[in-house]
Image (cartoon, rainbow over all chains, first blue to last red; front, side, top):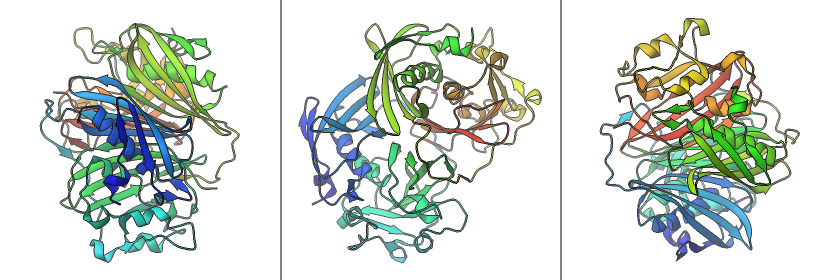
Length: 264
Length: 264
């Protein structure tokens, strides 16, 4: 089953249904980026096909495989920007809320880009370590078998230890079988990699996301995505994880930030 | 009127009223952090006095001085975390949505902090430039007269020009008359400074926030706050602005990120 099929919601007029497909989970909980991608697809349609530029998810109860209800509300339809919100629920119990901002791609824009940052320096994808699910351990989780994620060897070797530098999770991402990428797969990418803190001495375990925001700067990237996730501040059991996603030509694809609880 | 008075909502049981006080505006539009602080106060009470750790605002229509309705909904009340949402409206027209995450301060936490970053290097507050409203120009806006904000001379000199480095807005912040700080004034701080891109050659003008997230790491900071806001990626007329807020002793107080439109 392709990613597009696994994230295809059915419905219209604000009332949608999604199916959280078996296997997209981590410690038994369906991946938050995967859940978000189902909602951004529904909101994209409800926006009249506008282009996703920002998605923020707030996760209140763990999602597990199975059907979900998606209530999509158009909060604002402006000349150039639309804001929509989806409530993800099952049996009347809310699991997550996702706010999506969509733009009319033809809106008048400031011209001239500024890029004061560089893609992560990664070895070629075939020199990186393909993350595959473990049969006899909770990690790598089943979810990793649904995508093609290649972490850099240096990170994989430092799992649970780290070198005292910023906890970082770096590697390449693409969909299985080279499936074409879109804004929704970029959303997935932003929550796909092992948490940066796994590559430090902070412990490896369930790291629940409280909220997650993704700015999509290129909704149609091509090839492998070069990804880097970094945590700089762990205080009082909370951490932020900042992500940068680039394409193979060195163009910025997305920025992400999440707030999560540190494993205990 | 103190900040606490200017952001004190009245109500209960999910139905609150706020007053956007005259003078807290920029280009005629009430400051987004100020609006957010009114909502986080209402949500704090509705959460039973839990502690704000994250607030995300989505701004859909410009707010102007005057009364607003605040509909507060408890989305989830968990053992250690609560998630609430406020819809800010006037005459039935929604202006903004704010999601707040609050924690039970006594929840069991991972012990041991990691701080891989430093406060900005700032001259003493009295060597910085107090930002005061201009009588005959749109900027500095009236809002700046409501707080005490001191930008570093180097930034002020580069307004509208910049030196080609990352656009940065740096300086000290406190409330007027040394009013005590709390989580809500930290929220205000995250949206108070002139946009980082003003200190570059990207143009000075109305830079509307699309969404803004603040992670509050210290809800009771003391003294002056050392602030730094940076923009690294401007693409297709969109920019992110990342903020770090520290206290005078070098402790992290908050992280912020916003998505905004570049002035045209």
